[in-house]
Length: 323
Ligand SMILES: [Zn+2]
Image 1 (cartoon, rainbow, N blue to C red):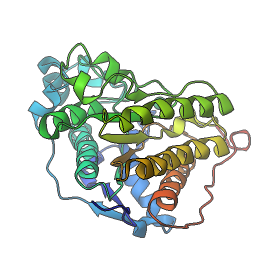
Image 2: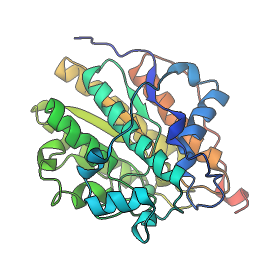
Image 3: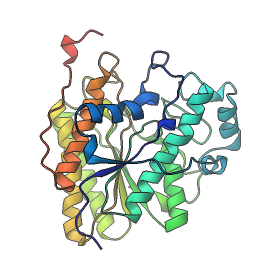
Image 4: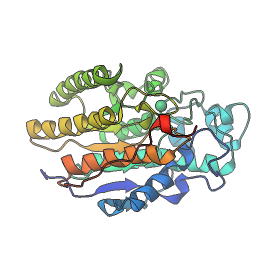
């Protein structure tokens, strides 16, 4: 069993994860473009060499989506049938539908790889899952990617997954799916869908308290792996209005990575860790969203992967930017 993590984060990225016909101007949310923009931003910042891009995986089939959704919703969505095809709040196009198939698979692949290879931190550079419900999409989310991934990994590997959801918004998808997906109680046990509450220092205190409780579940052998979803809409200058200053937002990430490192030591083995992006909606300066995500990934590389990369994110001040 390796006791050191590798030096690079394995990113499950393929160009198909982004709709070819979405210019980013038609939809309020830039999330459909986020995977390609995140990877391009990492390259622009000179950070892409610290990532290993993994593009060798197939997309989900219809049956995978049925793990978390009704057949009516799945079929209506992929057929572009109103009103449910745009229940995710996006303008439906065939290529948007196809991209969603791949983004959901990216999350599953990232979690699966980290579970099987805990010496590697993995990344699904995606968002758009945690508000979906069995019967439809909601809030820029189409399918319950967390639920689908966790149920598959429970059935395939008896893996019990925890999600640390530091998006501004509560991740209702998991709780709203419990009546529908019966083995979700095993796949994501009660208490394993963390959503810190409050603002500023109270938010960080709540995050620490929830991590302490999750850590006890992990040490008791009740949870096998962790997925950290650090939505950038929990930043105070986001269009969706979050709880944290830049320093507090970055501190939240460091708290999580240092908690993982401490658990590694107490367990005597590496805790499988996958990362995902989730929200972040600044229309005045989307690079501020990407800079926060990049800084968070650098914190992971520095704390868990043996790097000492200096990186200060350029986050444009809301008061000086044009809306
Ligand atoms: Zn959000």
